[in-house]
Length: 332
Image (cartoon, rainbow, N blue to C red; front, side, top):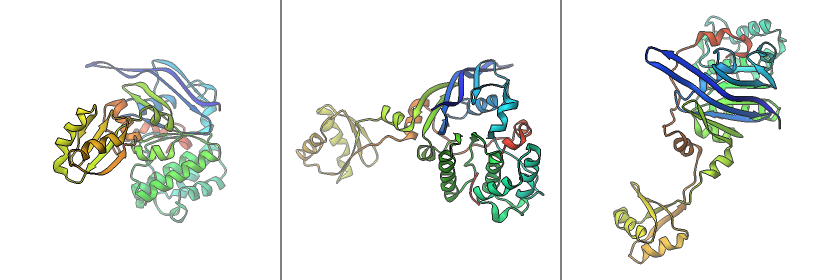
């Protein structure tokens, strides 16, 4: 596979009365063609700064960026025709319909009008396309934003928190759309805090913390690298937890006492757990391996709890740049 997006040593520094803050500190990133790549990081880690810098909305202090093999921001006038993007929360004229909004964007970008109907169908807004946008829910406005980003049928689609305001059904529809776009050959860079969805949708992930990359690779490889040999032990009587933990420590286990079970690491044979506890008259009701998920890996890598959505102020500069490429969900 060839790289659609390459970032190397990206630097961005902000100066204020409080001193110097490095928003990006030598950040690296590669997204291969045809993949759905999840871009993950806690609030303030540099995700949105990276995307805005990539799209020419912020000037970096150093580093190299390339989209479709062309250096940006120098080549942005050429490559922007092949990039669709949602960066932060979009806004639309409330008295316009979705069809009118997309038609205006299509005219500005020299896009055939038939594409307007196609993207409205893709995002599930066909039946509401003639209604005024001010009557739309947040999720429907997110659908419209995604439609605007898809107008150019881009080779690279960049989505910053596209699931904001979506209900569970809408999130499932988004997951299906991302899979379909990837299958058609489109490359998708998806920034989100909904880590369960990222694990289901994405082929690969890039994790950023404090402006630096802390992990990158396929979802399966990253989960495998952080897999543990821990097992969950539930007992017939919760009152036996403390004494049982002590018994398992005596045979070399590392034991964490949870509210209603034990998490045990360091005992190679699970049978040793049941044998030890049975010898003390304690009986096991469940013995199961603890599977690692993307959320637990994220917490380990960043030391920060993920946030389900963010309250952000609308950035007008992001709305004015590359109009057909900009847009922000799913769900009524």
